[in-house]
Image 1 (cartoon, helix red, strand yellow):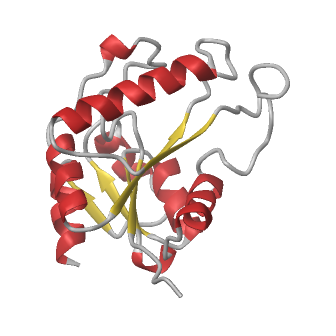
Image 2 (cartoon, helix red, strand yellow):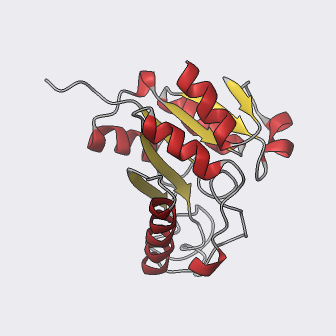
Length: 187
């Protein structure tokens, strides 16, 4: 039987790229300081790197799933050009109060629910007990906690203001994705 893999789950907006409030143009992708370096470090250390992102802009009619996938592919290409890579991307297009069917839904995938993490673990053979979630919002940290992974709050994006809003402490607070990656690799 194949050994289960370790993974680092990453929120997208505010953790990897600048949060521009419903990114709808691939030309607006701007990597945050330390993001590419952090992903590269995790790649080199043998972790699967998986993006886990709420994208309620789809439910709200701000962008389509096709456009989201174009943005996602563009981000992947930009990372590859800089020597880093993402092993998978999962997104939740739902919102419990906004949009129309099938997107106005109380789902199991929208963070803080752990659905995207659990789905990725099943599909990619990930050992959640040896994995991590990095994000800048309490919903990222709570999704990781509910999935049974260690959690790291980054102080990029909304991280600084989120630090005091956590219901329970995170395993680590890091200045950015590179700092979080260094801590994960050391542990």
